[in-house]
Image (cartoon, rainbow, N blue to C red; front, side):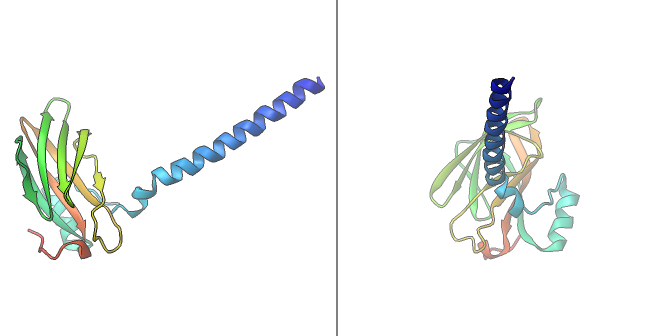
Length: 152
């Protein structure tokens, strides 16, 4: 009995250590969520409401599937693949002379990335409302200090 109890205590301690490590990793993984705007527009009317609040710059876009990227605010976006039935898409974002591929994203899912020069280190955020046949509609949200260009 004593050896079984000792073994159980070791297992409990190992599980406790594992849980603490997992909690630490989870806090780091959700770090971006803490600085996210917290508000995601699901359509053009919601986007207008966010614009009125004035917390961030918003750039609305419609991008066709193409090899050449289209300028959206301070970045460029190229649509690589669009699956209208599953509302999924793959795009390439060009910012800071870097190319960032975002694969198999879903409509309504915020896609975040960081750009140099952002004063508060807040992420840029792309949200796609609708995935059509070879096109996507959505918006880019940037921190106010990040761009001197006025919102459309």
